Image (tube, rainbow, N blue to C red; front, side):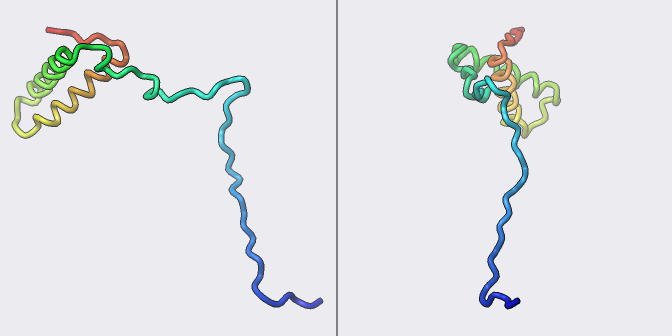
Length: 94
């Protein structure tokens, strides 16, 4: 039997990995970030800032007020307060 002349055809293979499908009758859900309410819409911006300042102060106090971590304290406190506000947990004022 004669062999074909010229380049051999390239065979491409598809991935056999299957993705998990949602059960029938369910609607695709939105991500939590798309549905979550921004903390600035829930609370007065000045009150939010005061809560963040208090949380940042408490973080610094736990560290013994070592210098050089002020920005990290503020950013961590911001995340902490915003998380509590979006989850509906009322921060404790002291």
